[in-house]
Image (cartoon, rainbow, N blue to C red; front, side, top):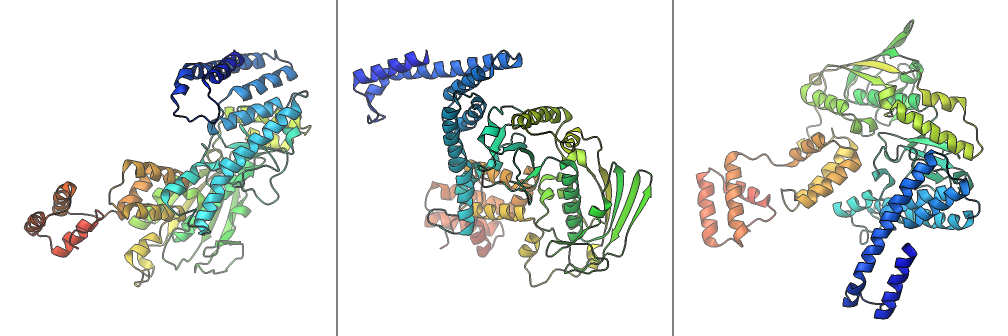
Length: 532
């Protein structure tokens, strides 16, 4: 059917004298528009029917491998050829690689699709951002919100987290052949990865499963032992946060499961972010651990650490989990604005690893099929990682030094600088973007709001927190000042202010009790000062 319509299209085009050089607005194209629409409808219908058919057959093992591979190859040809279809094309190509007779042809198409997906989609966005932030070529890569938003939308990490939560990395294309499963959608060979991705030292390893760090964009951790890895990482981040906020004592209490208190007792040089374990060492932060002890009462263990902070409380800029944990964000706000003195939080390995048991079972089945395909064994350690037999949970209680006992921030530092010093690095970046939007107008247009939302999502900032940051930049106006601005906008929207209009505005400002200098400030908020 598809070939018949394609032949009809080509024949009709020849009769009308249309070829690849014919202008798009040539009226002759309209005469074959119906044929083009029919061809697209046939393509979509064939694609949907074949997908439904193959799913039914696969579920009942009714296809032989070579035949199944050929069907996936047809699907690859039928699916959407735009940028949105690259992902599906690539997945079908991986499935079609299982066919021995067509492998060489499919391999060429897989490599072409992968190059287009990585280099022209993911990597182009990432490398462009690198050039923007480095200031390497400001003429072609200006640091403006619109271009940054476009580049960020191309990143691999811009894909919905749950879709990219797991990735499988194969040794080569042969080990990847036939690895098609909806539960692990992103598969790469070890030599062809998005440049944005980051791994721990010694990784990535071939034929391995990796898990996306929930709080560090672009970072992937080996799934084996992931529960304990993420749990310890979040505990250390919380310690760093509360030490920066002026903690005098941190008490850890094990509620469930195995706990590594040795890992928990490691400390940081707060200014440099360097980890150390020495007892009685005072760092640049100006605090010293008084003691650290551990008690063991059957399943419950407890440890406490004491500090003597001297630097005025602040938010360290490398606490990654802060951007994704609303409870921590509320803690920062209550500590800095309300002088909170005590706080307790529970950290659980099950909640840190945000995957349901049913999805873990599905991912496990997919991964086992992948390693079998690569003639690899499924280790006992990996089996334990999937089972999550032992949940770790700690209750952490913090006591803070009263804000009144700290020396006030340097008086030479402006109020604005002091306030910004309390922001995280991602919040500071969002503030910088907001300032650019406010340069021309105090109001955010719908188009600018859409761009800001994309920036907010890329930085992992909640809507509530973004609203607070935006409100902090907006001028606080009295009702009289708002009335004057409304009247000023009515006059200025008509066109350039006349002398008569200016005279009336001045009288209105005087009636409201506004000085001339204040009216200039108010008018400048709208981007143009009409007193000049």
